[in-house]
Length: 388
Image (tube, rainbow, N blue to C red):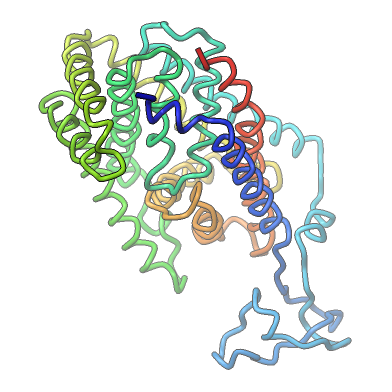
């Protein structure tokens, strides 16, 4: 009987997945670059006046119905392109943006190094690169709370890693990522004041705080569950697989689920026997990948805004909050949630809300959108390379 994994990578399904992926990528990019906002100007040199078109008594800078054309108005419509033209581009800006690209590459390097460690170098550097790029592609198209872990085990399996061990590896990576947050949260609150993490005076401040603590609870719960599944009760994974494959359309592959369960339990015993140095290496590569990911935003902000050492430390702390929002996001790649949280948390570092929006776009152009297009390009070559 043909494996469900081989069926999933059949011709028309692969073509459909690539088409959908590229369409979603293009739509997300278009939506980001077409963002507009009204901005207040001085000396009556604006093009619009506020008329409270939505009758809520507030100036909604993103709502076109709230304004009307007026040659002597005090507001003007700004676009991403107009803000970019007004930015003072310097040699330092270019260097910081190149730094942001290098930090993004550094994030992937640490991920590649981690997967090499976890597979005991069974995967070559080339194979590890493909795995991480396709994994990032899947993560970019998946809700933040799901991530690419749902397909990562199949990616590893096609790279000749037994499915049970591949599942155990994915569990370990998810556990380490969540452990990073569990370890870092106390340090952040120890060294950074609460008001620096959640800017006061914002209407959304209270919801942000609640969302943050809900996210913390989810992360801690997931971390505990993954730890128990991997190191104490690997049979939980077997029971979960059997439950999934008891569904009507998957029942005929239930025997495969049993084999996977046995492989997971065998991989669990193998990983439990690893030395402490092995786990230190895995955790350090995890820390390296997340710190590199955080430094991308610091580099983007430093490219256009003068920031001191303390400001950069505060931004690093705020990113812990930002990424928690993205991790529990129901949207693909945290889209929408990422840009909103970026603007809310970092609004104190720039006077223009649209400038913050532009910086958020630059950040996403460097650290998110490339994976959508790179993944779409690499996927056919990877499928062909691993078809045996």
